[in-house]
Image 1 (cartoon, rainbow over the protein chains, first blue to last red):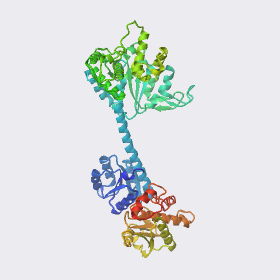
Image 2: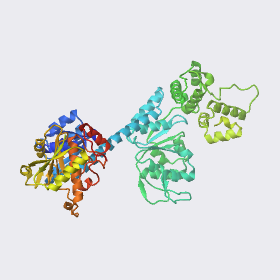
Image 3: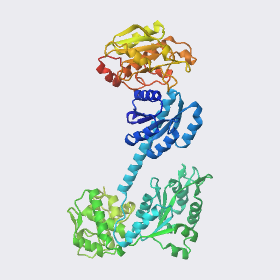
Image 4: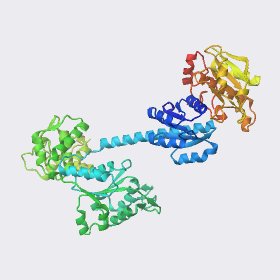
Length: 455
Length: 181
């Protein structure tokens, strides 16, 4: 045991000789030991001096060991109880175990048994404490990393209210809204508010899965199930066991996958590709789509029965253009976040810049606003973001030249401008441009942009 | 500053001498063999056919000549404290008396061949261990240290009558130059 001196033992026995001898014995091991002659004294002592381990004699006058154990479970549920009993009272000890005692030892106690039981109980205590600490840390990290739902428009107040209401239930949720409105953010908020928050939320981007791989991706596969299946692999359903499964762009899945999905959602049991074993899985489903699923059903592109499975509770996210009052709040929120992460001084928007932000339609919604602010923070060295820092609708850093320009020339110049602003950081530039890194690399090659600027 | 070894009931003289020499070598202080012998009759529990060790300690403590002396009782009977099935020995933590028994140290008690050397080594180790408690030392994590807890006889064979550096440091205020692992 690593922390014996931190382990507090309370010995409860009506026989003084037992209390004294056990106290001496544990003191030699370095434990912090206190004693009580009965149940009432033990509870009084616990109220002022918490204990990690309680050794309770089962047979005591007045409040017996079983009753004391029940009271301890209420007063100090985190404490571990070990029952001391005579050989003749093993039945009662079993009763104590059923009521939640960690273990029991019979009198007279074999020193080896006592050392083993106490050592095991102390290790159990340590793990329990560590578990609580880790859960608290995970919660803290999740809180810290998790972007909040920002906005004080009535529409967003309603989204927050519905999110909080539905989070506590285990109901399936369908989140609808245009691209970039923050559907995954709301899904994460629901997961975080649910009893499944200590397990994983596994995301499946249905639009990004190649048809040939989707089955293996969702259900996993056994080794040798198909060419290239060198190892056994768990699918998304198994990975989400105990947690939440988030289907993004659910409206984009194929007819075949819709059937597979329906079966898995109904049975909550899956079989890996190439396998025969049926694996039970327990997950909550949250789905999101930018499509009108009801219309997709009418047009026979989406199964009606699957639509019913998803459409239990719907949260609709309003596009940013319908809630312009949220734009300054969101912009300021992103500004603070990016300025902190990039160590920049920018801390507010000039009034003209805010006017420009609110006047814009934001077809890419919050994601587009986030990218615009990130780019502005990269460019701006001062404290205020001005209208010239905002890429609306294209790179505003350089005014167009006097000569007529082709679309390709404008793209070339814009990419150079963003790469310059990000000091050649391709990942960051790709994020600002709203394209993936591979596409950006191909454009860098296409326009022959010097490598030294793309380190 | 000395350790006084006292017979608790009848013991074999050879074991008394072995224990005295071993303790002297381990603690580096004078060890005297007392001419007194503690009578064990009042400590005997007829139901358990064992001897209570706890009441022996205050009786042994009376034999201390100075506050820095320690008294170590040597018993051949099987010792116990009421809540435990047996003890190899017992000590007053930060007190001046301790007792150790040879009863469960014999390899033949466990069906093994007699091994006088092993018995002697176990006796010295346990004697020094109990005396360590009288200097305020608690059980040590280092399995090679004499203060490591032994719950069974063969656990004692994993250590010697020497202290780890940490426990030796805690013994320093006593002024003794103890054997170090």
